[in-house]
Image: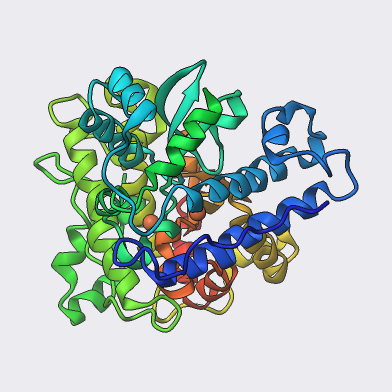
Length: 201
Length: 234
Ligand SMILES: [Fe+2]
Ligand SMILES: [Fe+2]
C-alpha cells in the first residue's frame, strides 16, 4: 500500500493573511507531494510497505541501509507535513485549556513561557528544520530538529510542530522568520493538539 | 593573504570606471577596526536577471548576508578573533571560545560563503572555463560537460539548506557539499566556486524547482574569477 498525500483539511487560502494561499498551494502540492512520492519510491518492494510511517520512523535502524537516508528524509517529510496541516486551521489561535492547558502550565510555568520557549526553538534552528512540542516519557517538552527529522525518530510523540524550512514562509515573510512564527500562533488548532495530547498520554 | 577578496587589475580598472571602486574595496574581509564589513555587490541587483531576480539578490545580500555579517561581529566582539581573517577563523574553529563557536561557525561560514558567491557570478558569466582551469576540469571530470553534470547532481542532492563546492586541493579539483553554512575552509581546503542551495537563494523565482535554479546558475558563472581563485591555490 503506497502512502497517499492527504488533502488539506481546509482551502489553500483559509489561513490568510497568516499563511498565504500560494505558499500553501506549493507547500502541499509540491513539497509534501514529492516527499510522499519519494518515500513510496524508496520503499517500493521492501518489507516497509504496509507499515505505518510512525512505525518506520520509530525504528530507522531496521530500514535497509541503502534506502535509510531516503526514508529518513522523505518519510520524515511525509509525516511532519501530515501533522503540520492538522494542527493549523482557520479560527485557530488563542491558548489551550483543559488537560493540555494544565500540562503546558505545569511544564513551562505559563502559556506565555511555553510560547517563548517554542518561538525561541523555532527562531534559532539554523538552516532547515522544525520546532516541536512533544510528549516525551509522559512529559511535555519543546525541541527542534534539523531538516525532516522528527521526535518520532527518538520514540517521542510530537503533538505540535512548526516547519521552519524557508519554503514554509519565504514568499510571504522572506528573511523575517520571527514574523512567520508569531503569525503561526494565530492559526494553531489547539483542539487538534489537545486530541493528540490525550492520545499520547 | 586574503586571496578570496583580491581583485585583478582588470577588475579594478573596470570598477574604477563604474564608480564602484570604493564599495568593492570595502569587501576585503577585515577592516582596520577589526569589524567584518558586508562587501558591496560587484554588480547591480538586477544584473543577473533573468537567471537570478533582483528581489532575491537584494534580500539575499542586504538581509541574509548582512545578518551573517552583523551576527559574526557581535559573536567575536571582545575576543582574540577580532583582527583575524575569516579564512583563518574558519580553518581553526577549535580555537574559537566554546560559547561562541556555533555562532562563529554559522555566521562566519555565512559571511565567507556569500563573499565568494557574489564574486563567482557575473552578468558577463556563463560559457566554459579555459586555460589551466579547463585542463584541471578535464583531468578531474573528463571535461566541462562531466563537471556540470556532477556539480548539478551534487547541488540537487543536498537535503535541506547548504552549499555545493568546487574545491581545489593544490590544483586537484573535486566537488563536495556542506550543510547549512559549513564550508571546505573549515577543513583547510579552498572552495573556488560555490552554489548556495538554501531555499532563500531561489525561492522567490523558482519555488520548489531547485533544478531550474541550478541550471540557470551556470549562465551567470564568472569563470574568469573562478580561474583566478584556482590559480591562487597552485
Ligand atoms: Fe515544509
Ligand atoms: Fe544564502
